[in-house]
Image 1 (cartoon, one colour):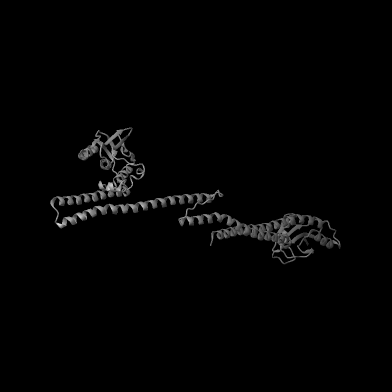
Image 2 (spheres, one colour):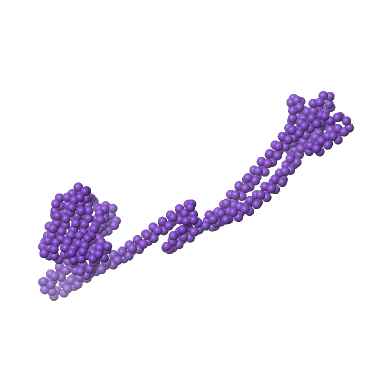
Amino acid sequence: MKIRTKLSITFILLLIFGVTAVSSYAIMFIRNYLLQEGQQTIQEQARWLALTVQEFPLDDQFETRLFTLEEVSGYSVTVYDEDGAVVYGIAEPFGDDEGAVLTDSIKVQVYMRDAALVNIRGNQGLYVFHAMMRPGMEMGFIRVSKLKDTIYAPITTIRWIIYSGMFISIVIILLVSNVFARYMSRPILRLKDAAQRIAEGKNETINLDDQSDEYADLARSINSMAERLREDNERLSAINEKQAQFFADITHEIRNPLHTINASMELLQTGSLDADREKKYIQNARTQAERISALFKDLLTLQRYDSDENFIQSQWFDLQRVTGRLAALYEEEALQKGLRLSIQQSSCRVLADAAKIEQVLDNLISNALKYTTQGEVGLAYELGSKKVKITVFDTGIGLADDHIPRLFDRFYRTDKARSRDKGGTGLGLSVVKSILDAHGSEIHVESEVGKGSRFWFELTAK
């Protein structure tokens, strides 16, 4: 069942119930009101009729006058003597009493109350007894009565008016509830259709600017959700593309070393190589094996960065301890290439993971030595207010501006052929960025083609 139908049925049932309840209550209220008003009126009329009858002469025209009084007043009048027997009029039954003589209880009540009224609400009508107090008069009581059907006569007209109004109201309710249900369900249906299109992957924005209620808030929430969904889809699409490229690069990076190792092993198995060539192929195989080992080491670092919450174990250490080891490690390589290696070794305490920071500086210095043929490779740091700026610089070939945005992507190479010749894994700078991101620091690059590059970042220091 559609929501529009549910709303219509709900409105109709509620309103019909309300109209019916109000109409029934109104009829009952009017019925009781008429009965009370009739009882009060007949009491007032009984006094007047009793006084009037007392003044009638006791002659042959008494009964005629009495009948005329009934026609004028609209009440049935019966006159009793002191013993309760009917003198004039008709002894109509009242209550459960079918006799023509007043019961002793009624006579006692009237006498004791000294011309007071005695009211009886019978099954068929209202009865009021009033004493006749003129001395020497044979008549003792007067009874004034009126049938309930006469009292309730106006209710028939009122009932038809109420019922007619109720049916007219129900028809109006049917029409109004249908229109109202359409009005209420229209924004819901628009939201449903838009949500369906969003679920199908369409670029949809819900516009309910004509609404200022909860529907508009819901539309804004769905739009916000759809926007985040689109952003997430775009991000996932980019991740999938990078992942596909990542696996392709891994395959390529491993295939070449394995091919070199396999070729070297095949040549060594022939047994026809001299000692120098045999040594050369063994060294080639070892170099490629070390390259694969370095590749998987970098991949393990990146995997831990992506999944391990405890990737970084920060503590205070002296930066001099790290830079001293790096100076000793690369001194011979720089000397062989005719480069000047200047690594600052002054004391500076920083809060970081010592092993990971050493890996960062190792990768940066190693890259600088690879791409610098003359001049200088250096590492320096400058202590500021609670921060130390660490810079690795060189006078090498430099980088073009279009390479810098993607420089830290995994397996990205500015010159793939030359880079592989130099034995890199293509993951060094990705590892650098991952480690520094985990430290809450950012790696910066300044470079100019033919003049060299500068990589710098900051750490918390004392």
